[in-house]
Image 1 (spheres, one colour):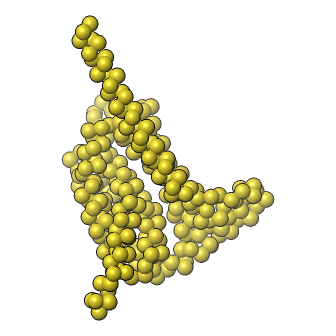
Image 2 (cartoon, rainbow, N blue to C red; image 1 turned 90 degrees about the vertical axis):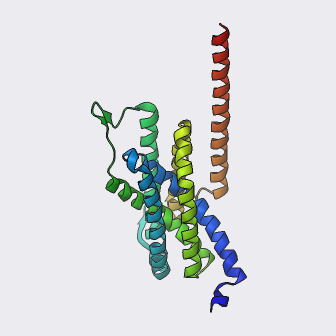
Image 3 (spheres, helix red, strand yellow; image 1 turned 135 degrees about the vertical axis):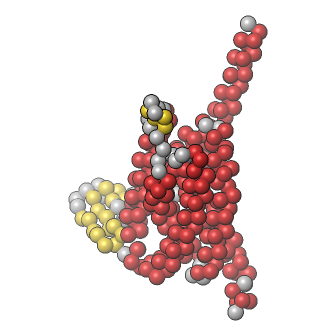
Length: 264
């Protein structure tokens, strides 16, 4: 029995799934890090790690549910037929559309707080932190969105429950290992916080287009096309490259100004 499970095909699928879950889970890791920053700094690491463990457990539960009820999630339960708008809403489409809209709202709000009004959330008595329970609630909500897509990707590759579960657990352990490094990097390089928020904004738009495509939405006869993964990663690479080049250029200008002031 064990020999049948530990085949080259299953091991290859396990490695592919682990890599896929880790890559797809990075967006989730960014969001968990964002939520963890809103609680008391003494509880930040706890919320970040428990949020990832929550994501692992939720993915395993969702995996079991999807395997049993995948047809119900994919089957449209609401049809819209208008002269300018048509669509067929399924459970899958609704989750992806809702998650995309929520991510866009969260990213825009946080960008405004960082750039337009940095004192939001603070008063004369000191900073106001989100409760741990509230942070876990929003992490759970967004985990459903992120986990749903990764679980469907896993189901498309294999029907072996143990292979998918093992890949989810291993990728989760990798996320725990990366979480502190990501949080530490963002604290040392505050300018990259804005980049991370724009990445979440981009993910939100990608989810909206993907949800519209799944729901077969059409406006004035033009169907909604999902943003391709190649386009997403190209834009992501450009964003990162621009941020890195700009930060190095800014440091060089500051260094030149310091030298000029020293000579002056």
